[in-house]
Length: 315
Image (tube, rainbow, N blue to C red; front, side):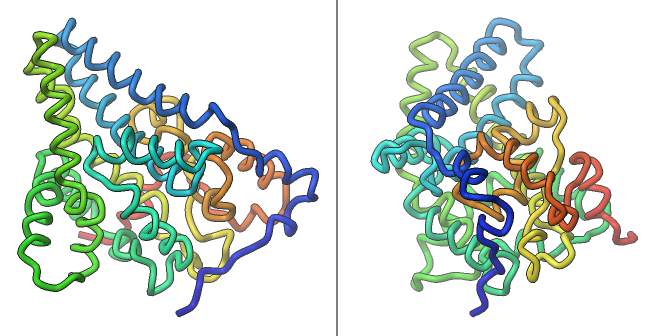
């Protein structure tokens, strides 16, 4: 097995220059979790009070459901709290379980991705390897996401396949799906039962389906796919050069609101130094790009440009 190439912080920074990126905050991570749930709550309330806003609220909630996944990812790196116990409690029960994931299962899977990024052993390689594709192929994928087909496959078919399987390991796609669904079905169902009960008590039972389940079944899978594509697809030399292990995408305010919350767009910086907390990635981006080595990094001007880059195949 060949691990992904690495660089040490000392290759770019003096000890004094690197020190700010090593510190962890006691409050930033928990506040991000509070922020994510607050945005979800406000969007749900807006949709209940002003029904014509429901399409917009579905997009906002779906993006913050991705935000929960991103904060689970932060917890997998130990970045949500200085306290390992609080980090894991927040990352699992308030971020992973509500969206059908398991921090315990996700962490080793994801750290394997970092260890072997874009190598043959990378468990996420299947997410970027098919690209570039034709515009029609991408369009069909996005339609499957927005019509709930991807959700049904991940939340129903894959757990059922795992339950029927007599072997502990399936194919790579099945293993990926089981990590984020099959191994955490019961906690996911229990959380959502409690959430539904809360909506019923509040006199808005329908909002659970329209403003929580519908975003999870449609917008959340689509923006998750866009995130996966933008991070690694079609980055030449990504298996050999640590500066090209991933792509950073410059996100406008509306892209941060509807596609890429919590600085997930700074993925090249994250792969260079994976223990830097997500809220410090913009500062890390500026610091790295003040150095000549940054010229090798893949930086896209926006998500539209990424989609153009990964659909170069003719129909």
